[in-house]
Amino acid sequence: MKEIIREIRINDVENFSKLLDSVINQSEYLLFNPGEHQISIQNQTLFLEEMITTSNSTIIIAELNETLIGYATIQGGRTKRNRHAAKVAMGILPSFRNKGIGFKLLQETEAWAVKQELHRLELTVVTENEPAYRLYEKFGFKNEGKKEDTLYFNDRFYDEFVMAKLL
Image: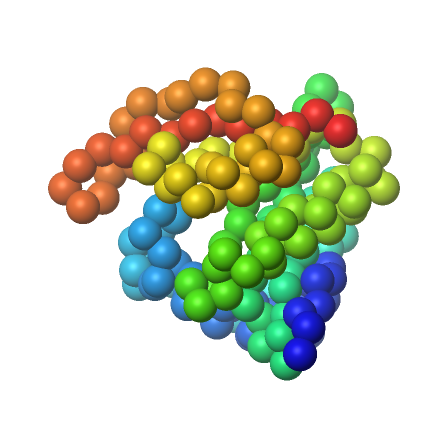
């Protein structure tokens, strides 16, 4: 069956929470350590409500057979000076990576951002995360520089590239 790429709905809250936990527990390069992202359904609901009702923020999800398998968050700036820009973060369950889902999530993310009249999408990616870096580059994100020692895990520091795409 084909995956569905769509904007999140409030009734997705429990499945989205499970997806986040699964992605975090199975992904090496995300911000949280396994088990560290502890958020109640109530707080997750408040977060989703804010993302859904803010004009320059949302979450795009990938769904297969009524199971959430990936997401892209778009968090827009909160002041008049940076409302045109949004930070993007993505996560996909490991068994669904390298199957074009990340590219489809980015396509829908960009289409949504253009519709909302955003001008800039930006993200960070751990320098060692070559598959994600290649995906973002393929999609037109440009490397704007490197932040050194921004994350610490596996008993060492990791650098991140800052990438952006102007729309």
